[in-house]
Length: 164
Image (cartoon, rainbow, N blue to C red):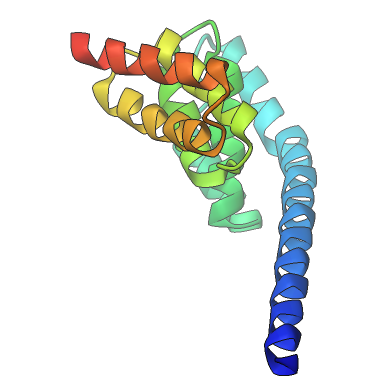
């Protein structure tokens, strides 16, 4: 019995440490994102805007990958696309938010999953993107079945999928 309790305590401590490390890793990545955005993304966006174009995302991705990492490049370039395309190009915005949510968001942040699913519901006509968003919000509904906002989002996505 003592061994079982000891193992359980170690598992709990490991879980707490893992969650703490995940929070710290996210904080570190977010801090680095800000640096990369200021150093590389913002100047490239300004130059592209002056030419009436979008930034060359492939060149930016390579530049960031070479200086930092492929993961950092993916995170930052996708974030930049989300902000750039919001209100300007809904299909590209939707593609970027789906990619970012799938790869980098905490799926247990149920409020965020609802927000992102609603963006896709409102702004995307892609059955694939809606199916993916449906998975996010289904997870939220499963975790909090009494939350009517999550259920409404889930139901609305299901209805929209029927029309596509």
